[in-house]
Image (cartoon, rainbow, N blue to C red; front, side, top):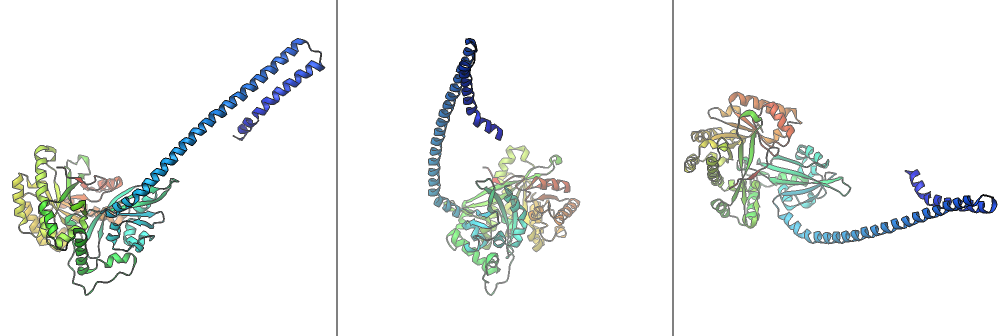
Length: 507
């Protein structure tokens, strides 16, 4: 490359020296030699040719210079225009930042930005309220301090993948100190800097808790509410005891609903201010001959397009005894929708719709009769509906669950135990009534690729389930590697973002 550049630099001088040398030879020949006129004419012709070649080269160089100058001017004009457009865009972005910030603060989705060092550099109001922390306890703090050491360890793999530049989606369960269990949908979106390197990632968290998933065990009334010391411990003490749970529910009622009574929640149930979603539950083995099923999810739409997060709404509805009303609303609308699908789509005839039911509905003596009348009204066989009962309810109230199971089985409906295997495995408690499915808890499924204990636990659950004739469903399946492992174990069905995201239950 250097030799080529050197030749390009000295080439004009070589041409000029050749012309001068030719002229010198011609003069020397004319005055100091006795060569004939023909030689003099030959040398003169060479000189003229050399002069013409040099003139052509100079002319071409001037033309190239003019063309490059014109191109440079064009590029400069284009750069000036792009600079002006960029300034206008920056001005528009700056003008829109307050509106974007306002929207961000009003979103029910919890949003935070984590830099490459694992420190939280931004969070919205929903994120702060969920953790029950002050801004100074989040800004610039490491994720371990903000989320707590246990949660940080559970999500460390996803964080590492995000900082490597890969988007990550997963569901996880969160058990609060008061015993309430929530399901969260978490998404990590990497952000790249101008140098193309990862600058951090945005963490988006949505509460996707279903009605039957929240169980808050009764606790004795504490003498007082302890104050948080600092950091991540604050959100622990804020949920400590029954009194603080009541304070939290009342706070949600005042801030989200806008009044201390529950009349607007009742009106929402009466007026159907809810939206139903469904998530696919698919057989893992294609040639198994099993049909696809769907889990029904509920979202509340409040006035002014506000959304009440499920994790905040369900404890509130449960506190005021409204969960049976909500469960009946869901059963009524799902049955009506499923009857239309059942009549016009033969392929869906063997599909089931999984509906979560609360502890209050399980113990409601009037629910079986309501279920029977609803099925008769819409001409739908009971086998289309499968009711999910939380594993925690089975552990606490096995006789009540057994009676509920016998009642719905009498009407042809099916039963599934959700969150199975999270704590103690309760095979002995399902004697005397029929269970169609075990939905293996997602916190165990999430660990099977890296934890041999979790893998062995799922293998044992599946082995016993097969012996007693119960089908297994893996929850929170997030990757093809997990699906492959579940196939090897022999799990029957899978549910999660690797299968399908929740979608609206179409009219």
